[in-house]
Length: 204
Image (spheres, one colour):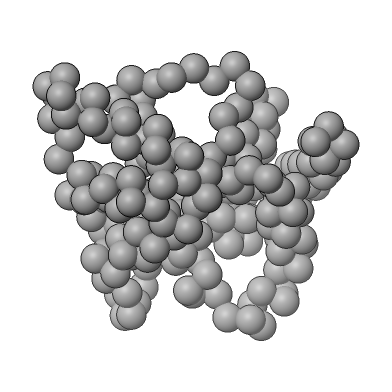
């Protein structure tokens, strides 16, 4: 577990630096260092799954470990400055939570269900394609932050549709609005994402 003494925090920041450069060994060390917290995070994610789910929190952490080791590097965003250990830890746990959620969605969603969610899959494929040359999850987080700056409800809708697999009716309940309003948010968010990704592609 990450301690507060300067030696431990210095080691952690160095591991994060190496991880951002695509070091698989550093990814493994980070999982080991934060394992108790990652295990609790996985348990929270699993608590929202059906009682008969075939995965357990430990397996979800293992899936996370495998995914983190595949990351080839994280491109720094313009103006991004070095973070302290607490900020780096929060960033890493947020990344881990996103990966865990994606793993659970991929595990649970059958092919036929994916076909019914074609519009959501198009957005996902666009996000991945537009992240060429940089780590996809970091790029997606940048897009989500952009939506959040416009209207936090836009980010909620995209996260619900793309990452949680929620229907517009479920999102409407979450936002305490009508399904028609939720659909309008989704249409705007899709258009904004498509335009933003097109601009990013042209600038690359």
